[in-house]
Image (tube, rainbow, N blue to C red; front, side, top):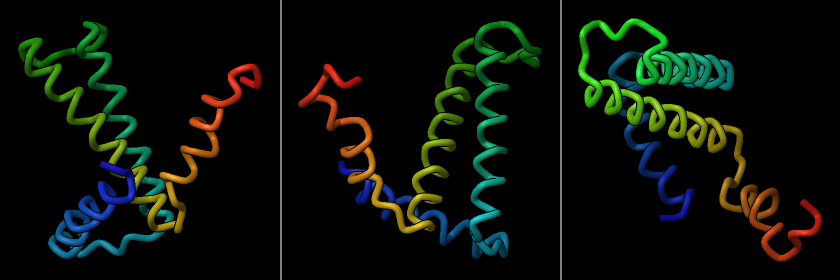
Length: 106
């Protein structure tokens, strides 16, 4: 699935979320939400690596939460890019994948 298609699906969920919680999704909101989700990902990582309190969760539960937090961060990043009218398929192609044709320039 291309990032654009994935982002369109994420947007459908974001609309439901913002209506339910009466949230106005602005650039500032996205930036703060990304920070929140990144903090939760960091916390989940520390727990999976036994460097934070796990609150008696099993390793499987901790790994599941870690995976979910990755999904949250990626989803919010893609939604923020959409909000900013950034074509992430194109941006990734230009910034990263273009080096596949010219690896000596990395």
